[in-house]
Length: 126
Image (cartoon, rainbow, N blue to C red; front, top):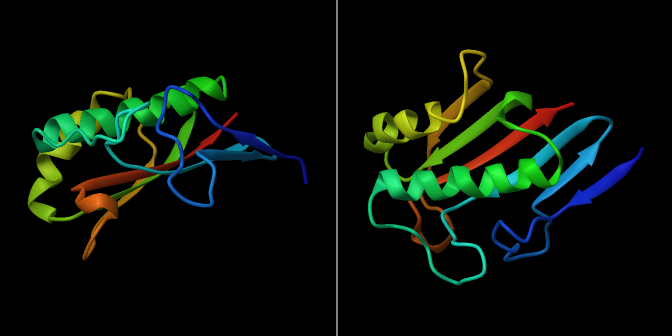
């Protein structure tokens, strides 16, 4: 197994014992991202839309570091604190993809790190 660690200075540093992403056998597994603003300890939580936008920017930075794009994403998981955010999150999320959307599930959870409302993880393939 050829395992490569991917970390971008343009995405938030991990806040625990994990990496932003791991690439193995042509697949990139991106850890769940929240709306932490890179280089700070602040969270973008002005609105669910701005929070989701920051999450997607963090994911994009990791994809770019791995020399990939949203076109390479094959699977995502969206965790929401409240399913009432689904429509707003979905609208922002959709802006980052073309018609070839990845597979996905969206679930409501009891809680997310730092009290955020949305966390998204992704799997991409070369």
